[in-house]
Length: 136
Image 1 (cartoon, rainbow, N blue to C red):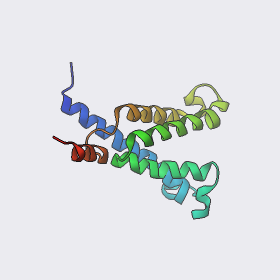
Image 2 (image 1 turned 30 degrees about the vertical axis):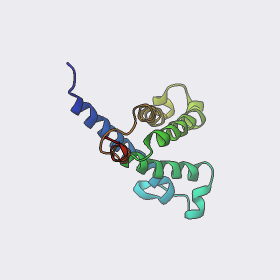
Image 3 (image 1 turned 135 degrees about the vertical axis):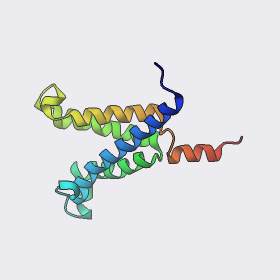
């Protein structure tokens, strides 16, 4: 059974919005200590490697994905970040993501690869800007 086109675009938008919201939370934990995180110790800690930089990418990248702004570019960068996170931090603890606690990194990586190829979809700033710049 084929899903109606409206359902596909709504689901695409919902996937982007939920992905951005979930990813933003990881950055909020790292940067500010919100949601049970520890934080990096103030604004100067934001630029520490690797946690502060990861927090910046996750917090601000998650917001950009959530609102659908520059989605393809941001998703490409975040997919790379998640690939690095998996291979650097998780893979040394074992092959299978469920064993090395890297399943979130793998899942986010592939969600971002999808958004890189498919774009933001509807209910996004990218879509609003595309419609506003059309010369119909």
